[in-house]
Image (cartoon, rainbow, N blue to C red; front, side, top):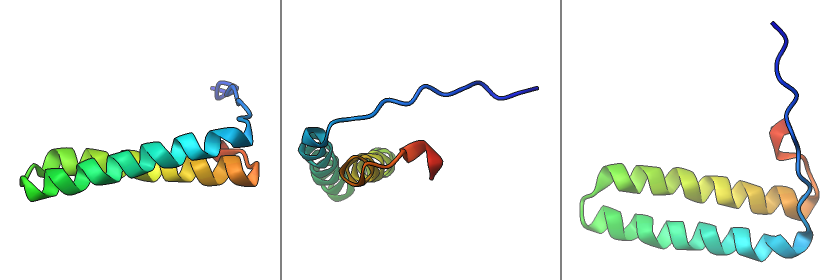
Length: 68
């Protein structure tokens, strides 16, 4: 069975700040969730924060994030 060909979208570097904003928002909400001992939400938000941060780096460096 051959894998499906993935569609890859190149993002404009102007999107970097949007990805960083998402990461910061998720980070702040994660801290709130931890303070409220809502650890499931904190874990989910931590993952989303990491994804948005990685997206920002990939777009900034003009890399294909699917290669990592």
